[in-house]
Length: 539
Image (cartoon, rainbow, N blue to C red):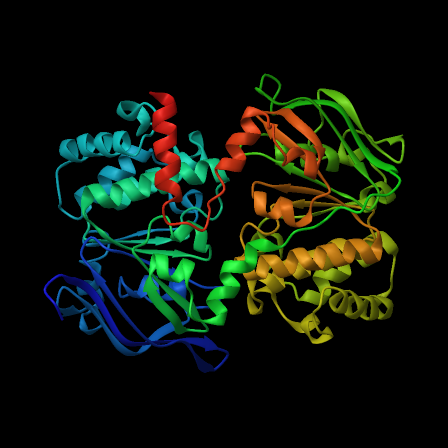
């Protein structure tokens, strides 16, 4: 091992428990990382990316075990240490940045206090020095009001700010290695740019090495020096970033590169209005700030309207108004010309049936204790009054409709992959035989190959069943793949709306132009070029 090699994994094997048996998850992976280098780990769900990233901390999640190989950090095999010995490295020498910052911070403590606790617990510095260092990092990560930012609680900052606060906390002990596990997956494109730039600058300033885990080649190519492509626990291909992006050797890598090419061409037909959202103004709380300001949207039968915008633009709030979960201050929602009662409780069972929703995170949308037959079967009984025998037959039909076999009815959500769980959520929505399906960021938590298959499924179901979709997303690639019409929102207002071809053709509204320019390109120089353009325009 050369003197500048910081981390080396040799023949790493990790097993996962399935019932009473152990099955291999990581199957003999070799990895080497030098000081100051960033290695991207990319692949679809189940490839072993996060498992390998956690192995860099000599940590295996519950139900997993190390079954072979070495994890050598600065000449020490971490796997040969006791648990107490391993903990001395975690946080201090090797830090971890999780995908969900909101789930990782303690909501009861201020951000600055959590930063200081990290540094003082590991004995790196005293409280006052740690507090000063926090302000310095907040400033370097371009967080607002860095001197007072740490006084805020996690819920008082945006998703992008919270993710940067997590990067700062990971750097509290000035670690030699940082593991970034999907740090921008759940962020909108404009926020993603801020976080990517902050991560890249933080790595450069601190001289840390990094493992950057993601399923998005365009994102990882902006920060990584080298990329390792994984599939089913094995290395498919490894090389310099530009070589992987421009001249991939393996078919699987090529598939990852081409996954963004899905595009839906709208079929022009006579318009038949199904859903009308008329002049909706809404807020949270009696004295709350306005979240939606005079918003009007039209959805025609058999078509898809994509609602696009960054976090906080009002997209999901609009869905809550349509479903009756939030009563608007002004305006009305009509289906087929009939005005809906503003509140959920005032809507009859048939009105509830006609609008169904598919949520962003299938992990939290499905009851982990219910089997698939009960999850899909409940709306069949509630809306359609089916008895047990009819429900069993219809559940099997719905599973086939979403391209799963009937034996999935016996499974629990924990026995399914992310893509399979989302298909169950789609089947549950279809069980009510709705006219309108609201899809709220339904692919943002999925890897790109799985997301592409889910989008293809939704397009097929729309064609076969005549469904109309209100598709909420921050991902421009998803809009290209599924939308007929586009509504661009910013700070609760509609910036522009119209057919997809018109919205994506110049000239654009200023905010739409910002969104389109913020979509990462499959070019390692793209982020640096974009940041240089922004600096030049600000000068």
